[in-house]
Image 1: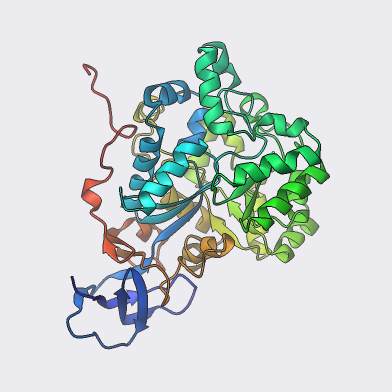
Image 2 (image 1 turned 60 degrees about the horizontal axis):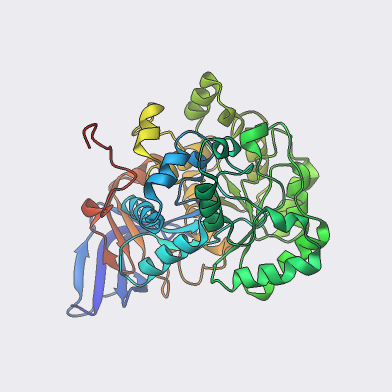
Length: 456
């Protein structure tokens, strides 16, 4: 194998917001960028001619649930988990492969079954299976499993309690709802033990997740200020990014006071406006805001259907997004997307719906269109979907931009993404760690994404 790969004659967009490099050369060695610009091609290098193509960094999604969290809250969640119990790590790998096929080379999984997601993460990192690189939080501290009040309490009435307990244990991983009942001194060793399992991120439920019961009508604080400080101290001591789940203005303010690194779905405040002074505090805090935006077309569909998910975007939440953008708060791509059951998509008439924000593989494309509708330029959106995510999670020295020393993750496009953000979907090739991804063979084994024949 040649020691160096040279990508030549490309228009290079570095992901940092700099002026695009026309007719540029990118050199890659040992899976990392070594030079970018008007540089000579070393003798013996493998040359990839990208004349007439645009090159951007691999996309980085700052908030996914590779086991589909949205589906866990409604129809489809029970059979999803029952059908694939014992193979959940493989479903996560399938999800990561669907993401990689579309050009998303790294994902931050912010809620999942802890042991399966860590197993999938490690197999992908070792090169045993292909997939988007995974950084995982496991459970959200204080949250229960899929069949509890935080997701789908009604499911517990129609399934085996033994099955429910077994699945819940996979997700809760010892840091479930009981954590909210404990004093700070008892929370500390539990959190410390949990972090010792090897998670990459710490996500805390500052407010509850009772959306499936109440919709967006109310939200409660889960922990005292003392307990939150303990959790933050343990995260910082371990050198891990701290993430917040909030559903109210007060919860958001607590997250900022806690010096949270990433404010997950920061604009979702149960349809209450974020005060201007709080938005200013967000901008000054250095925290990144993950915005789970939806396109106006999909928002109209949700409102027409009368679903509770109409409260996810639209209305005050759209106003909040625009305020956050106008204040200059660092915004990152985050979609809540997962590997949705083909059956559920078929039920809702959403197979292949390009506007659905929760379907891995097309979620980042819908996000790009939605965030540009809210006021971002295509260049700003591209930065928010690459280097800004890496920076928010403290990984920008390793990934997120086409810069010497970074991992050689890049996406080749046949259209200019600075003219129209829809070009994110015009992918011709994806490279991860300098190696071309065989997109046609992904996912290797469709467990969730494939339609099941009626006579199977």
